Length: 305
Image 1: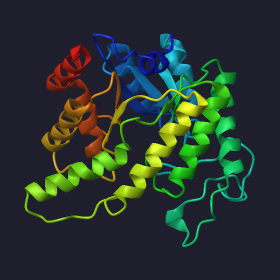
Image 2: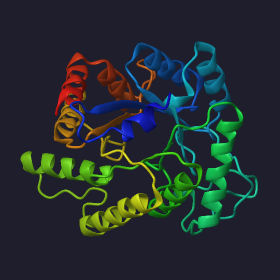
Image 3: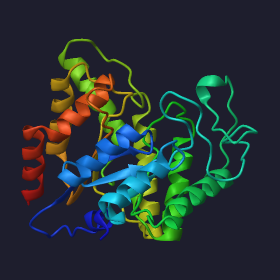
């Protein structure tokens, strides 16, 4: 069963839409692995992403297999930088000067005034290594997700272009929305919110380069079609770069974005955290995934013609 592929292949003439709820972050740590697997088992998450370079990736696959989670529900969460506290993550592939230090640890833009420019060949090599790592362990990725965000945000456009090329090569979908870059959508949501609050034209990521973001997005969708790479129509998420001030505000942002989705295939993305973790935003996302109002909104979206 390929949940992600089935979602994207949903036909526009269908009387119902497919709405997939994805929990990002398998592999970060064992506690989060257990939480996400519980959400997969209970139906609060339809699919999840695995961060292969993260320290608990092996544990995640063992835990998934132990409870019989279908590999068709697991995507590769491609990353080329460490995410979260702790020791730097090590690349899966061989040392590449644009991605890692001599010890194989990912470079960070936060720790360097001038990180090296990313090299296409290095990105593709690391992507192939992460994909093979999952495939060799019986969990061939159902799709590729990334990059969403990161402490090291450099080269996001090049990474997406490389992911498109690689997805075409291996025949899997890419989590990249047809109907607009979700980062731009999140930026616009916060700009609208600030205007409503009378705070003026606050500057958010991408807010000064809308035309460039839109043009680049259109080129990538056209390229995906030329390569035969399946894309979801809409991707809904609000990354940490766009923090909400309260649980109610986060819920409103997600529900509003879900109502605006127009395509037959939608993915709603969360980065949950254990409710006792002290990670306020992640805890809110976990709560929202279980919130009856959100579950009703997903049901309505699935029934919309």
